[in-house]
Length: 144
Image 1 (cartoon, rainbow, N blue to C red):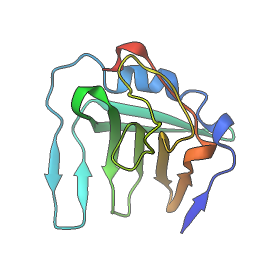
Image 2: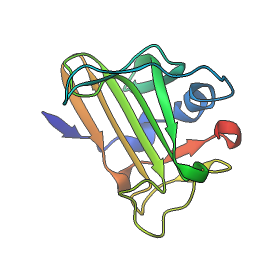
Image 3: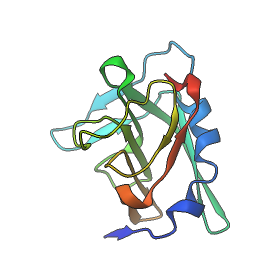
Image 4: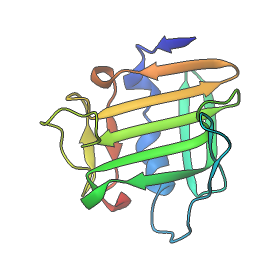
């Protein structure tokens, strides 16, 4: 069951800090394995994220980042996207589903509206989707 989250503003207060370390600087190649046609595992990479749900802090570690051509978008995945365990996914910028007015993630900044920001996560058997219009992502300038 996917639950639309209406608490997006409070939920990602720590996200900017988490993302600054999530995809930065390292030249290590993220480990991606195709388990079968529908399940992808994003484990063993350097990506990390922290989600605050109320007073609970949920940490996701060891995922991978993908940047679009010219740093137009950023995709962050941690865990099994279609599995049963915990998973965190973030998509920001001029990704393929964004509206034409979406801006590039090159140089960082805030991403909200125009389908520029999408966050999904799964924890303890519950899945959450933060809709584009309800989600604001702040990327550090050196993320790219």
